[in-house]
View 1 (cartoon, rainbow, N blue to C red):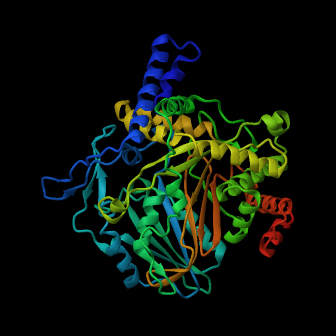
View 2 (cartoon, one colour):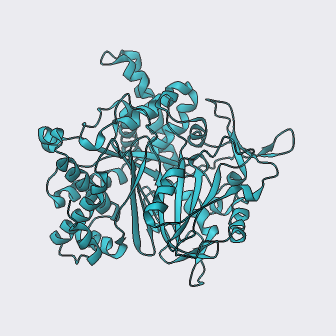
View 3 (cartoon, helix red, strand yellow):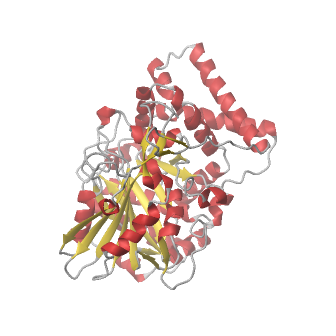
Length: 522
């Protein structure tokens, strides 16, 4: 994915040298993929070291982590820092105390990346985490008191979800607990804010196993929050070497050319997204109606698809309906041929021994996979079948492994400007980031207090959807520029209507709260 700006510069008149180079890189990557899954190979981890003043330096981190620490986008894009905001909601008058939160802070500081800051050479592949000296634990907790209801609480979350975690904080790790303490009768929240360069979503799930416990007192099993199906997804079926080589070659070619692919069509939802876009700094978190996970599973079972298929198909339908509501001329002119794609982050599970080692637990081993969303399809069942077919092809393809190999090997050898431009080109050609993270099936306590709801908010260059299941309920949101996408508050209603339409097609009972939300007057 990091090679393609070179191709873009040559336009249609690509000379033979470029073609040979592209094919050579693709063939080499395909060969490495084939070797990896033909026999097991032991990977040596480079050893940690120390600074001159005796502070610990971690093993060298991946270039994926390093690139986010350096800044993954070109400076002219004006992109903000990549910060993950996990919003934990608490019942009225049940906000964790300072002492209870200090227990959480001390646990987090036991994890290597949560106790240091990334250091290295700009554009280099020598980045490590350097241990912070004499961390003041209280400085990692920030308390804001307010009085109000859900709207005021969400406004505060939006206002602070991009607060700087680097500058002006001294020698502190790049994370904090932001406590929004309600002095009134409404709910409070603790926003777990952490820079993405510290960890991916799957790593944070593992981290949270150390920070939360089940409210009923039952133990949280190690690795219990990560569904076994996620591990099975990466278990390659046996295939001949020649077949695997061909599939890897084809996937690598797709990966390398993706940032120079055709831009998605300019539908209303894509307003403000394009080859010269800049981050506006204006972001709104649109919260979707809470849905029963059992209801989603019933739809999944009735249709014979996956849970993610249901989510993506219904969101695709919601975006289509939004575009039609906004009288989008592109939808009318393009019809079924409208191009609209999602970037779907896909994290690789790690061995159990790495998850147990707190110097290895947190990492970034993930890739983006591009998926067509079938925006031009009218029938909801046809849309679901289309999405299922697209995601099934990806699961059976070595594309994710090829993407990982490319982004681990090629970017460190490119000038930083070129690597950043490639990431920018990849994003601006797509329309949305669509992420789904597993959560605990039962009620949990955080800092000794019961968590009643969880939302994961992430500010990105393009709109981003985050879905998390907790207590057998689905919590979902969409973070976007509400000025570029007016009336975006209608999208959750269209999503509920898509769920109802799908349920009617497969004769699945619809929960009352979903029906009521779908019937809201627009």
